Image (cartoon, rainbow, N blue to C red; front, side, top):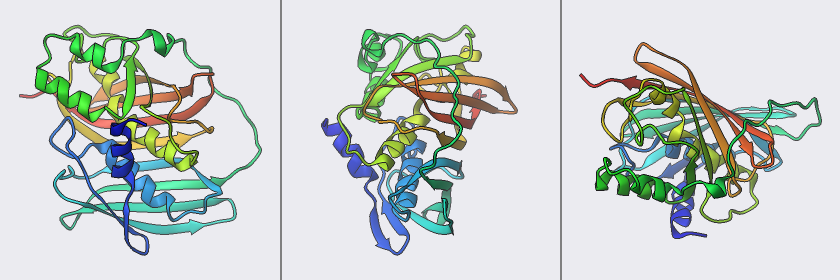
Length: 288
C-alpha cells in the first residue's frame, strides 16, 4: 500500500467521541476548502459504523451546505432513522464552527435475490495503455507548477487516468459533454465492502462536473475560467465492486443553466458490470 493511500485511510478513520457522534479531521485540497468527496466519504464512514455488517450501502443522497474549513475538525452526528427487516436508513449532519456544512442520507440493505439487468458498458481503452495522472498533468505547459503539484498531492492515493484530455488540458473550444476516467486506489484494500463504497464516494467528486466544462470549452478551477462548488450528490450502489481494481467512470452532462451544471455518470468494473450510478449538480459560474 502506498504511503498516500495509508494517509487517506487514516483521514477517513473517524474518532468516536460519543454514541453516534464522530469527529474527523481535514487536509488541504486543490481549492481552499475541504474537498467535498472527503466530507461525503467521512459521512458514509459515520453512517456505516452504526449499521450491522450484513447490511450493505445501496444509496446515498447528500447536500453541500457550506464550504468546509480545512483547519478545523468536522463533527458527524448520526440519526438512526429506521432499522427495518431489510433496510436500514441513517441521516448524518456534518458540523463545523457550530453550523451544518453537509447533510447525507444513506440506505443499507440485506442481500436479496431479484431481477437483474444493466446498461452495457461503453467502449473505453484499456487503462494500462493510458498516461498516468502525473504524466498527463506534467505534459501541459500552460498549467502553473504549483497547480500541478496541488493536483498530484490531492490525488496521490488514487491512480486516475483520463481517456481524453481533461478540461484543463485542452480548453477554449466546446467539446462533447462526455468524459471518461479509469481509477483505482494506489494499493490493495481490506475486504470490507463499506471501505470500497467509501473510497468510490471519495473519488466520485473529483471529476464529475468535467463534462459540464467540456460543453462550454472551459478549463475549470485549475485555470481559473470558472468558479464553482458541488451542491448535491447522489449515488446508487448496484453490485459489489472493489475500489482497488480498475473502475471506468463514464460521465456526461445533459444540462447547464442558471449558474448550475448537472453531471451524470456510471461506474463499471473492468469486466463490464455496472457497479454504481452517480448524479451531481454544482455551481458553475463564469467570473465577472
